[in-house]
Length: 196
Image (cartoon, rainbow, N blue to C red; front, side, top):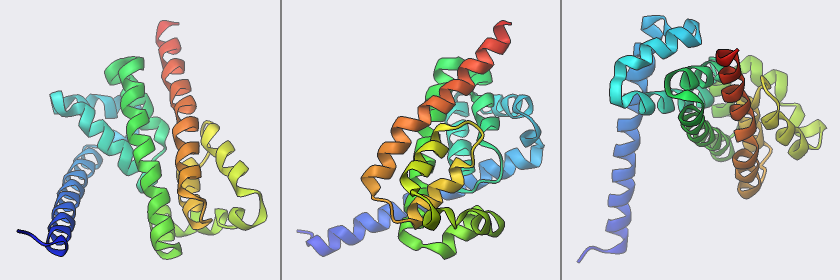
């Protein structure tokens, strides 16, 4: 019979192994996309991602997750590529799930590990530019509006929500209920442009 301590150790070991494997897969995917030059435009990204065949939805979701956690390219690029590849419905679904998971991860990393990791992942310049918001304003409303507005630096504000020690339930509720509107706007807007 396995003790509770041994079972806990095995579960933590398995979780670490799965996380390390996912991180390695993500690193290979991002490197492949970056090396191909596909990050230059949504069209180039969509064309490159089609090479993954049946794995293309997973590749898109991993890329969208990564671009939230390490905000180096605008999320709209992945959203537009997703709609171009899978249409407005499935493109929306894949983008929404991945962006929400990435946003919750960014919040959780900042909440758990603080300023050092958050400033490294979001970039020192962005950190210095935005960190004052968590002290000078009613941050809950600022966070909510940032998540709702298109082209706002919402990925960075996910980290700031963690640094502001926003309650996890509140942060997740805002992300889950507010994120779909911007992603839906991108999806429907692109579809309208294609129909015009």
